Length: 233
Image (cartoon, rainbow, N blue to C red; front, top):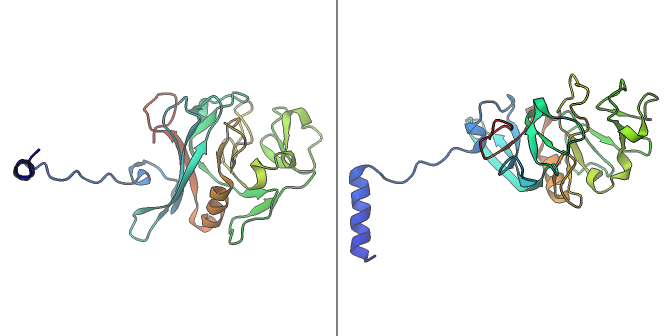
């Protein structure tokens, strides 16, 4: 198109009121609920069947604006994502929804500057996933007598994934048997997860240094595409 034609086209847009497009508000500003705090992690996959996506962490400033502080490629469950309220244990799906982040843990020491409560993994540290145990979906140290080893995670054996992690509060406050246990934000392994959300070790360390429990951070897990089966973000 000739320069004169470009100028004419721009003039017509101004006259017709088309003008520049209105900036799209940041994702947290478009969400109905962000947990009530001033920090938020969003873990977003393109669609329900996706096993990869993006984790982004945000601060809400004094003026109420959400500011992006960092982002990183993420991995989800090998079978994609599913609505948290209807999830079934053992399905290798990542539960969608908005969740608190009760505490952090890791085999390695907490990154310098970490303010979150951080629990070190020891040889006797287990996460109980036994539906018949009173310790279902809880850290138990040593492994509870009624929690079968075959139905639990021996945390120290996941040296790469659990170098650093944050507990995602899915099915945590009032655990529903059979819905799932041990959902974390942790370091990437070799591929898709069994239901957790994972990022690189560098990103996980950056998140732990950024997260401030006094600001009540939450994590929102969902998809970009609309679906009745998962939360759309």
